[in-house]
Length: 95
Image 1 (cartoon, helix red, strand yellow):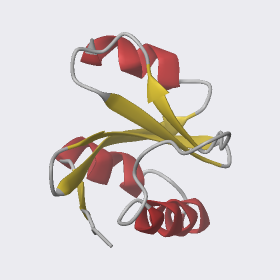
Image 2: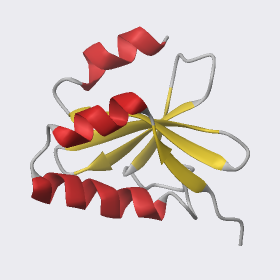
Image 3: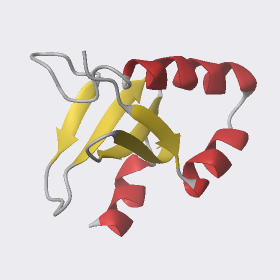
Image 4: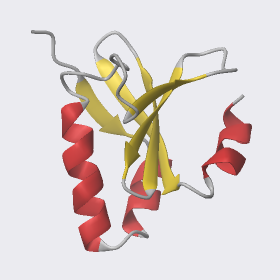
């Protein structure tokens, strides 16, 4: 089975530092699953491919937080984390 390497961008690391330890650990556990399954599969709402981006961009849902990422051939690059209420404003900067 093909495994991807998960890498946090500088922005994602900064976002992670401002979250509480329990939230951060929960996100890290969810990110671990992206090593083997970074793409949306079936009816799962945990991973979603976002519309309107030139470069394919995905969102991982983890409780009240979201991780936004892009996939390269061997790498899942986490762009940023944010609360579900702030995610739309942060996505505007990526388009």
